[in-house]
Image (cartoon, rainbow, N blue to C red):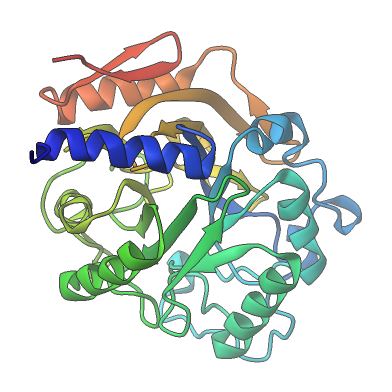
Length: 348
């Protein structure tokens, strides 16, 4: 007697649960991180060249997950000799974090970092190579550049997380190249149980909290159609899609039972960043998925930044409230329910 495909799937799910020892995976995700830059002047570094205070108030939240992810918005440059040249210095920033600042990331609990963004090559290939060396030595996984397009993270439960990251910037994985996106996800499907795809895309600033569902052009650059990119990623096999780049929060969406966060804004930045209005608030997002990546729920801790004192929990829950509003505007049909700083799938 032949078993139905539904029964076979249930049996396989039970076997997988027995093998890995858990049925839920938690992923904490945050947006842009730049802990201070010694270029163009050391006045842009925190006092005593010490970044440890910046995430101290929220480190217990960051550590309380199976996986903790963020976007590293800059390089551990080591050598500033290859600083990139700027056609328009008014809109060009170059971020060079001291190597020892990686300890702040490690101590805060970060496991995965995207390095696919417009600042990873601020100090050329020398800066990129040093960043990769510093992160590898600290035991932090990363991905998003041509020389390191993806990585995997093995959890103590036995579950394997696959990770890749895209952006519109030269030397990174091109957010407009869907064939490349499919090829990398196909590779990760053979190696991992749950696939996280990150993107750095979309226009920047307080005017760009909305997801336009079309190619976004900013400063003459094609910053991607992030809606199309996120949907393609899930169509190809991704389970969680996490966006950043606009420096402001954007909407959430549930697509094919998979979770998308279109931008998590600025998380931990010291000077050189505009933190006014929506630029200064952001979510710490904790996503729960099952062992095949299906979205179960999410929790949001709203934070705000002070330029000099770091990340603080926001009792007004401004980031959560803004994301709920943006989600209702941009994706009124998406089956998500917002309630008491949590997000749930709507039961059909």
